[in-house]
Length: 152
Image (cartoon, rainbow, N blue to C red; front, top):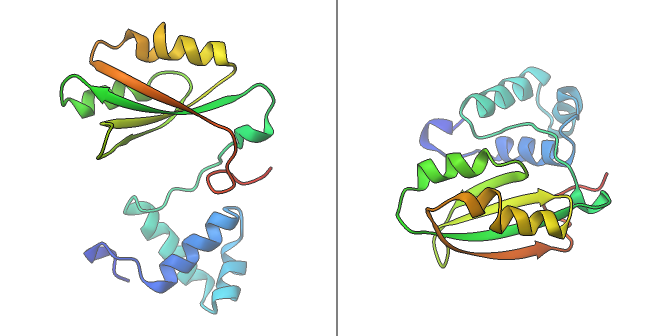
């Protein structure tokens, strides 16, 4: 195992790919497919989780839900105080992810709300609209995705 040097070996990559297809798949079935022992799978998954490389979670497919709007918002900051601003943004209801990036925007936030009106309020009146540290934003509404969310 190569986690000490920050690299994943082929077995770890295969385990992750199997869990991305179905996070509820049993270690026994993964072991059989990858031709290793069940305890090897269990140990590898536990180490990946302990090293904060793997997180098993349930994700919602907003494109299968009625009355949900998902947006990706590029955010530029007045000052380079990323950590405190990220903490504030993560606390806002509807925020599903926040990333520090290079390029045109300092941050990206993914948001899921119930309507365009709620998105407007999130950007201008509530949520981001209450933060003085933001100089400007650009919002892109997601229409469809086959890669981020799995079909229900």
